[in-house]
Length: 384
Image 1 (cartoon, rainbow, N blue to C red):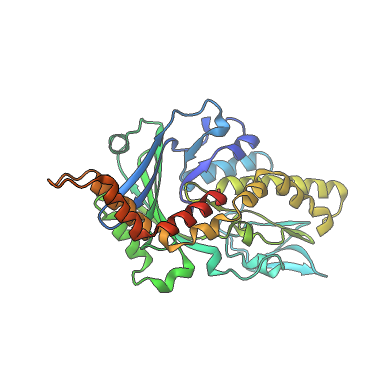
Image 2 (image 1 turned 180 degrees about the vertical axis):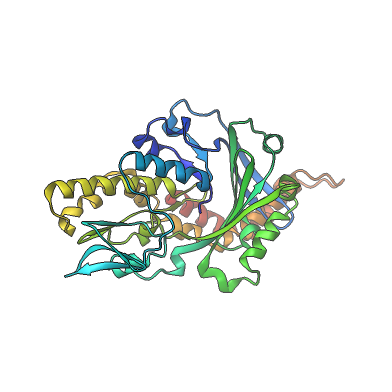
C-alpha cells in the first residue's frame, strides 16, 4: 500500500523514460494544501504545466498495476520474483545472515536485503533496528473510489493525463498530528488519511470513523458523490525521519526502504517511494561490489551506507531532520486551521457592519496566540 504518488527522479535514473510504458495514472500538475476544520476549508492551489524534464515530474500510481510491471522489468534482467511467500526468519551462522526461512523452506544467500516494511521484525532479528516506537510512525488508511475519467476531469479541473495531489491538515486526523490526502488516478481517486500513533489516547474516534467523517465533510462529499468503493487498505507509515534511520548493514545483510525508515513528511510533500527506489539501487550497487570482492561482511557492505550518504536520500533526511518535531505540534491541527478558516470567513462575509478587516484578523491572531505564531513560524522556517 502507498498513498499513491511517485516522484519520478529516482526511477528515471534506472529506467529512463519509464513513464512512457509504465502503468502510471496521471502526471501531477495541480498541487493543493488545505487547512480544514469541521465546517470550513481554506486551500492554497498551485498549477503548473508538466515539466519537460521527466525527472522533475511526479505521477499518481496504483501499486496493484504498477508493481507487476516493475517486477516484470526486474525478471527481464534475470531476477526471480516469488510473490505470496511470507519470510518468517533469518538463517544465522556465527552472527552472519546466510539466508531466509519461509515456512518449511530455507533459501541460502550470500547477502539478504531486508525490505519488509516499517515494522521490520527481521531487521530486529538481524540487530539492525530497534522495536518500533509510536512516536516514529503513523497509521495510514486509504480508499480507492471509482469515478469516471470525465467526472475526475470536471471535479478537479484536470485533463485526461493530468492530475491533482492534495494534502489537508486539521479535522481529517481529528485535529492531531497527521492529515488527509487525495490523489486523482485515471478513473479513480485515492482518498485517505494518516494519524500519528502516539496520539491515539488523545482521541475518541476510531481511525476508520475519522475517514468516514473526512469523506462526509461538506467540501469532500461532492467530490466523491456517486463514486464506487473499489479498495480499502491500511498500513503503518514511518514518520520519524532522520531520527529513526537504523544501522544499515551487518554481516550478510542490508536494510532498505520503509524498513530503514526512509520516508519524508515535510508537511507540503510526503515522499517514500523515491527514497525506497534509490535505496534499492544503492543496495544493488553495494552487493555487486561485495560480490566482486568475494566478501559479504559488514565492512564490505558498508559501501551501501556511503552510497546513501552521498545521495539525496541521506542529504534530504539530514536537511529535514527538524521537521518531525515541528510537525508534532497540536496547534498545526487545531488552532491554526480554525484561525485561517475564521479569517477567510470574515474576509468574505458581508453582514452590514462596518468592521475593519485588520481588527477582525487581529482578534483571530490573538486567539491562536501571536507569540505561538511567531515561535512556530520560526521553527517552520528552520525545519525546511
